[in-house]
Length: 270
Image 1 (tube, rainbow, N blue to C red):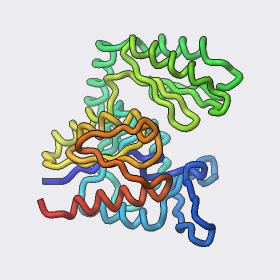
Image 2: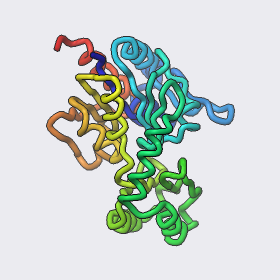
Image 3: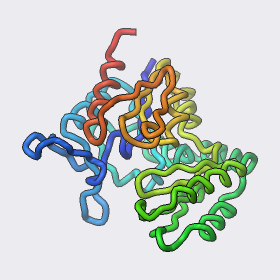
Image 4: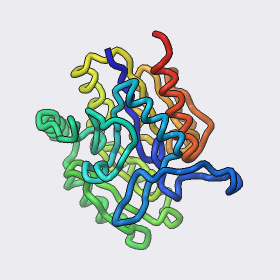
């Protein structure tokens, strides 16, 4: 039976220039591979060593990219290794099978959201009404499933984020602050639910996962074994669980370490 490796992408396996955290002397910095271009500019990277590890991992296990990105944002990433048979986009709202969204899965997600939480329109209206244009740069809706803001982080009031979290909690939504983005996501919209669907379809008997943010916590808890880097929301909160290993590495070298751990676990006798 296959081993499923469900991993978050941004700030877990791939990194923007601002998130690389290259603290070593320039001459000792790792060689980088660009894996995403947007508007003719390089956007995301991994180390060349990480690229080789991901290729080996794709040959040894069922690698499932698992992201909060929209399908369009995900599809501009050019990951090394075999093309994934499954990918999870929009935080579980879309399950891609050979690159195409599974209509039945998406319909099930929409039905659950309608039953269990406040509508997106209410959340969007609240964000537009309460977020200050002084520190908001963009208002966005992703796949008609959730909303997010792009902000000037140094101007963002911490109390506003806390108040938004409390407001959202009472309506069945959750809030996550990742870099310059504040996400408001329905609680039933989870990466773990989509991963379980892949497990059901493939009959996998071992699941591994990795992620760095609050929106990855359910995924890490649902897998048999999981890893998180030394940066991100979960690290900032010192979050852990019995089957979750907290790694010390930060930045792009954390992505390399995560892939090394995943590949070692996949190859280990069971």
